[in-house]
Length: 292
Image 1 (cartoon, helix red, strand yellow):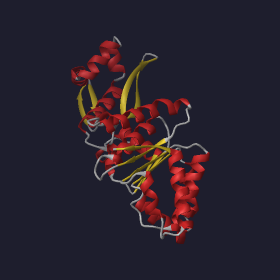
Image 2: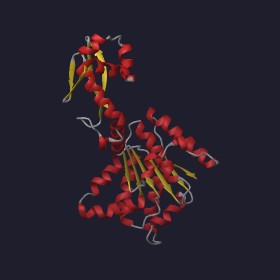
Image 3: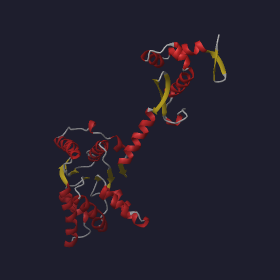
Image 4: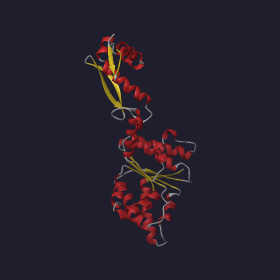
């Protein structure tokens, strides 16, 4: 009886074919393409190699343990030109990794917890009238902004741990699905980054990035330490640019907009108050205010 070499071991060819036919996927492939044993025998080396790779994929628990020659690719078969051919595609693990990579390219989470990447409007709670209204405005934004409508952002304020950050993160994740780039930043830490960027020479690049990004979200504004320089030379120009260029900007805070000015002045001098008022005026022009 004819023998066939499989690795360094000679085995019965009929036994190999029987094993291939018993494989549920291959059996279905043979039936769908109306393949007889003669065709299977003619393409035996291709089928054996495919099954070896497929079995390895089925046992795989992640990219780190990938057994394929090219990591993250899994084989699939096609019957073309009277031949069985092997092709390759991304496996689920590689596809997930690439989705995350593309997601990371679109959303820049600065000093934010990892949970923001998992935030979704599908789980958004509308158990209060305020949440219902916020959800309504988020959905309106998602519907109209991609159509080219000029849309304001939101200034969401309220007590600590009410879900303000999660709200922005949910919107951010929906926006990146539509291809928009988003920066969502914890503002107190962002202010410290502004200051440290002076010595490293990266301040202007950071300011430019926040001016130009499609969607800017500043979380917990008013929670930062007072700094007239940050207010006038950094935040002011960023907001002014975004206002003139009609770029949506979102904020969360523990205080209402009318109270925010007090957190932006070093003293009671009128000039200081006027500078803070200019920031507040820009925020009002950029957003619709709502209490959570």
